[in-house]
Picture: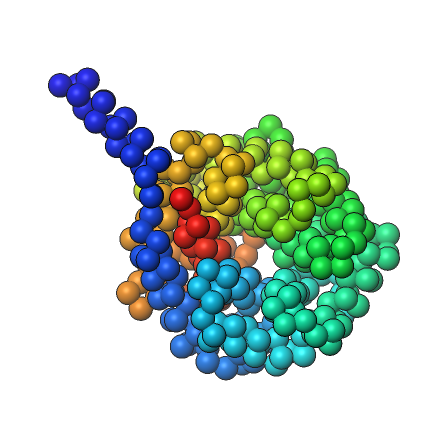
Length: 372
């Protein structure tokens, strides 16, 4: 009887691995439901965002949302999605929170969507401010701008997209130098720990700082930003781009490190190595991991047999435990930099910003939708 049960389980696993693992219509439906909720709640693309203070709607949180929206538009080119993004860019004059001469990746994150929109309908005026900012970054010697790992996702894909657009390898080289400075030099010995395949959020969380259980502090969403950035850059740059192998190596190491720490319910904990320190399920980090792993399987960088069940558990968990019928996403940690921020989480709790979590969810859905 036991042998029959084992055989049945293996047969089911094989069927999952080699059959169509997702109902693509359902995946698209879930993405559209979540997105419709947000567009209905925010019909005015220029409306300022008021939490503890008032902020313009082209900050990083909204920039990440539009990344996700453009990913949805890529697989389902609905005119209202394009128009919503275009109107946002137009409202902000295709510029950034503090204008052009700004080294903060949070503030030029919006350029990822500006470049996507430009590529659909090129007009030089659309990228005037993006080019000014990027030229400043290219032509100054500093490589230490990305002192917190979130910045890797906010800034790195902008360099990758500009390198392709301008056919200029200087963007790839500068991107690599900035990435490697964050990886190897910020803090004591860089923010990446190759022994664990994970990243400390910034120098404040380098050892000797630990979680209550004595483990290193690895924040879920922070690591999500990094692995998502690597996936996105790999999806953008040509195959022969210098240093591509470095990104692949780090991408694979991170994915491998995430496998044994996925929760049984499919989510990842907020604190990746201390499940008792705000260890509950969290959607934004889970979505970013799902996006990256699905990209890796879709592009033969990750073993389908190992990662497909992990991706499926994660996606199914976000749909069953996170997505409301209205389109609202639960278990989303508010902005912050460590596990304790925005706690406690719940199915019904509204985070301080709803936009970036939706962007992460749409990125995940866009790659899950492509899975064969």
